[in-house]
Length: 244
Image (tube, rainbow, N blue to C red):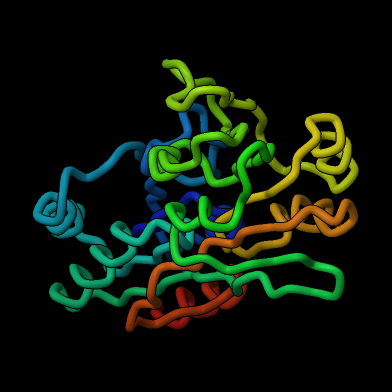
């Protein structure tokens, strides 16, 4: 069986590792190319987009894939939607790995918002805001004038920060709770903004915010797709093996 794995998450990485020594399954892992130097996977990899819906469909057909697993980021809405629809059109078995959302615990100061543009309505002028949302959606914070924005990203930026008074902070996760507490304290962070991506590896910033009593804005996820779905790499592995 030949499987296309749309990767980019820790769950997809775990699945790739589990399938690397499976002789009955040939896996091709695809990375969108958002990160310039992603970690290697133990299976053949391709990097970069497909060039649109028609090109994705052609790739699936020409490469004779038997199934597709979508292990992309919970906020990769366009990619996931296209994958789901094209797989349905081609009658290919398709599965999405979607880890659970974060849920608030005692002591958390969380507010849920629909999208990045709503942050300005909650964060006062003069605040130092830590954006753990990535550079791809940074432009959506254009109405945050009067606040100091710190945007953390994995790769260095090729241009200047798009908003006055803001800056990029380069760092590759995961980060420990202690590291996040030290960073937020040193940079005098007043607010934290994150996407509700879920997952244990990146939850440390939320725990640090709880300890420091920093209020957090969580951006809600895109609508859930109507497709087969599991929450873990282990469940995805069972699904793939069930196709044999």
